[in-house]
Image (cartoon, rainbow, N blue to C red; front, top):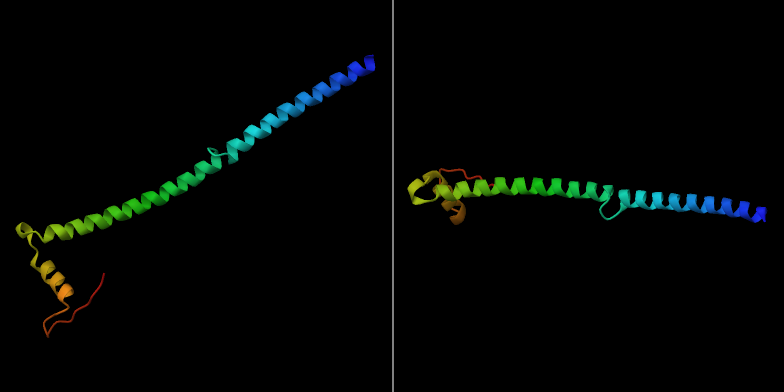
Length: 103
């Protein structure tokens, strides 16, 4: 009888060890590679930095366009800008002018 009780203790000990090792592995895996793990955090931070760069670029472009629009109002009309836009739109210039088109 003591043979079986000794074996039972060994088996129980190994099963406990295996159970806790499995738990540690499970939680470690999900901490690193899970849906809300470290790898997901790194990917989200990369997406966030790209989105911030795009947002900054869009804000600068909007500011530039807003400045151009403000210059076309009658109270602050910039005649040079108006002439430039008219030449670009109509595709005409004075014969003595050299025109360079850019975007």
